[in-house]
Image (tube, rainbow, N blue to C red; front, side):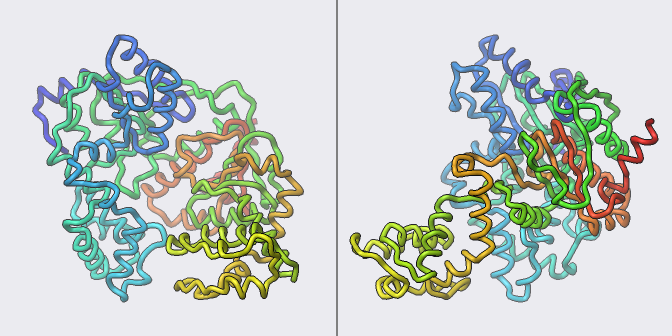
Length: 535
């Protein structure tokens, strides 16, 4: 932690307001409508105000609300509304740091590891390499990388492999690349931040010790600091975040938002069962809304009443579970988007399917129909194939059967994944279940509905944090919940936080899916038994 003199610390504490916002209690509303509005009404320029949050989603929501609340301003007036990384980045000179060319994300991290040493080819995790994740946690907690490795229960590599991966990674990015943690480290050492009238820190429970060091440096030049968050929703401990910094540092005036507007009694009571098992939870009582709500469990996906009106979150603990949910949703003939924003129905894909179905059955198609197929190939391939426009050579007036297209466009797309002609790619992607799914969607929803955004979103609990839906379906994996009992007390507490976040996304109805009622509720809690005890 960046050291400040005692007098300076006292001065910071005097100008700090700490807002504790349990789920749905209007934390963002309070920050924008009450605090920000008050400053702007006094004539304070938006350029003298910074709004820092942990995620881009939270920042974008704050900007949207600010613009809707203050129509005299536009998005350029809120240039200091950023994530902490982007806020630090804006003060680097362009010639020193070009974010378009110098950023390293998880995908590139894995590529570096897997291509640098063939012996490490299978050592990486599909989303983030385990060893690099531990290394990043060590940097964010400002701890020795070896000691951090020895403490972690989820390490997949030997110490030797772990150290080789770190060495490879650091060598690769030296003088050429910068990662997210580098941004914070460099800002602490290199950047002099401007004077501000107001600094708002949202989702502060998720900041890491390293990030708090940067914040400590920033607040020295700020007249008023408002810090908002909820320690019970701190779910990024795997990356080094520590809610104790939020609850302990800057002990200024404390405000607790007492009533949730999101959900009623049933969802509230169930959420409190989970919350009671969170260790080091700050005592803060809040109350449910007067809305009707219910909690139900189901033994199979088919039992869930997905025809209920309103928006839906179908949530899994990790991405692999979301992939299972995606398969279930397709089998059920549901129209949905996934956690990357991809819709399960795509008009371009459907047009390509129709053209492929015709020509594969021996019928002729027009040039336009051929274009639909080849454009789809462009979409699903990498950038090297997006330049291929071989259908342009086709005469407009002619009909084409399969053999005719082979004569005109018999190109092989020679990449490592396929190394097959274009028609083999279509055969692989447009299999019978895929076609059947599209037909069922059209029969069930109609084209007008499919042209709109879906009401069902598949997501991880982490990704949906800060959002809400009328209905939440929380999918519990029996094998995963069973392994929960082998975790230590701290790990159990962290998992309770994750499920607490998932449960509290629901506005009206919470649906819980599992193969055994003992595992439907996190940590073996049976909500139905709880209700019977209450009676």
